[in-house]
Image 1: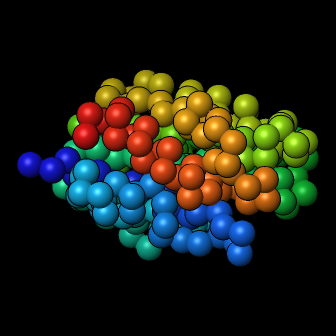
Image 2: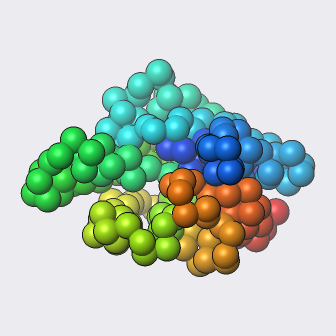
Length: 195
């Protein structure tokens, strides 16, 4: 029987792919896994979504995730909580407060949506160290993600940085992986899950 996988969360779960013409949705790692027949996919990612939105069950998304008959849940969340705080001109203290609240929301979301096996992604730097704001906040975001799910049984951290380290995984303009990056992610998930 095929493994059933539920990708959920933000654009890294909804499989947004960076192209020379701009970002394109539904061309990424979940589609690669599903179209190659490695697993049955339940798509539940929303570009731009935050952990806070998921915790409030926007568009009934958290309930859908809870009820999905999946064996594995792959979660990507918390980046947009901090991006929105930074874009609103918040001070570092307010951004940290948003991150802490987002972390609590992430804990709740994972507790509700978790499956027999749950992988929570931490983000790679899509700009190769060339954006000061990303340099400042990415390690803090990734640490908060790890901390937020550390005590939840059956949850594993999936570090995307080594997977997306090869040149061409990002285009330096978009915050999303390229087609090459998504192929690398699909391959890494396949290996990690024993597909």
